[in-house]
Amino acid sequence: MDSFELNKILGAILGTLLFVMGLGFLAEAIYHPIEGRGPGYALASAAPAGEGGGEAGPVQVADIGTLLASADPAAGEAAARKCTGCHNFAQGAGNKQGPELYGVVDRLEGAHPDFAYSDVLLEHKANGDVWSYDNLNAFLTSPKGYAPGTKMSFPGIKDDKERANVIAYL
Image (cartoon, rainbow, N blue to C red; front, side, top):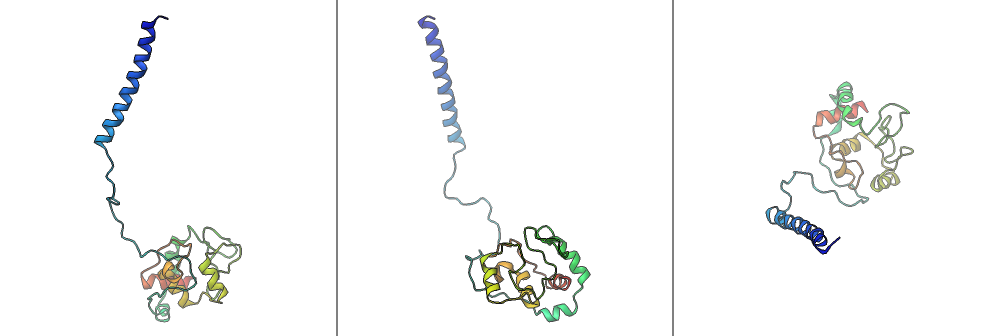
């Protein structure tokens, strides 16, 4: 190999590197990131949940006694289908991402066996709180409002009638 051949090889390598670097600089000049502008589209969302704590936040809910008087358990079963991705409703069906909900009414909060509850629901259990109709109503209205720091990501059932139907089904 003579020096002319070596110059051609080194020239090709250096030329390729120069070309690639030039493309990088050109792409940066055309598509440079704009810093400090925030997200392109802000999503409307609920107020951020607080850190896990013991006190349940105040949740404004309709009177469950009045709502249950006209509730339809069959409609509640249909409405509860959206919950089946995370919960089982059949006795002995076991836990999924959330605990089994068979017989949840008047059960101690955070007490279903073999489920890893969030700290806030374990504190409710330690306080002797049970899933009464009023507590279920408040929790299903806004899980993060009732139990700040809960693992449940569901935003809640805002429609009073639908929520009462689900509670009647439970």
